[in-house]
Figure 1: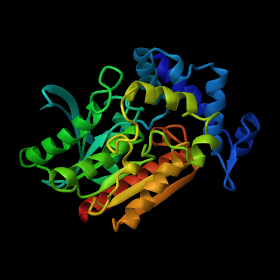
Figure 2: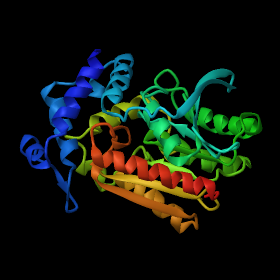
Figure 3: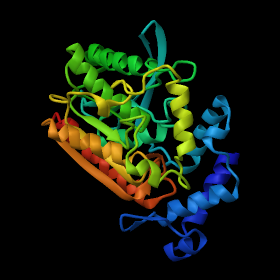
Length: 345
């Protein structure tokens, strides 16, 4: 049994205790009248007891390996009925890895979601989000094309944006060959930012709008001073020092942090963008900027459906293996994504 499996068993056995026991082990934070999910609170307490290092305290290669390892511990086990295919996208003068998922029993030309992983534009990869993409594919009944865009600090802004837009263009061009129907875009955290920017750039460059955009606790303003940035700056999975570290890697001076391609909330015009499914978390420093982006889309006449996972933190999208409430949200939002893709948004 490898170390990640041992830790997974330890986490699952600890978090299977009754909520009253978990609350004694790790009293919950409260915000807006809601308590942090007791399994999440216990997971944070367990991480503190194990003295797990913070992302910003590690060299970049180690931070990437740690993140990949941690997601294996807390994510849902992959479903057996989703097939995957490794691809290479020849774009931007380079070769990007990608992985195409198809659920069993999908129609001949299923709709598809071009998906961008989270990780602050610095960490995360196809493997860290493999479980998320498999469950998203299974729950939606759609294909999912997960793209490993270039990351900072080796490739600072706008490399990730360029890759995201080019990979969406590639999917449009290759849709017939791949046997895919309507195309949407989606992502979590930094990947949600990229999905939002793809819709904006498609508008500017005359590309067809995606059928829909799935934005899971997206970064929408890297320099945000909205209240949630301070309210949840400590004691959760995404802390202020980590956010600052990500920004310094992705947008080192003198790169502009107010460029709408980095901060889509600052775009002057949002009219005509793809229908949006926006998911935010109640205990998340990025909560307010994600919800403000949903409001701005709605004000621009874009169809928007917004859901707040009130008791969950940033990162819950990959925690369904150890948190019952996270699993319910992932499965429910996967179904809703499939419905919106099938209806063209």
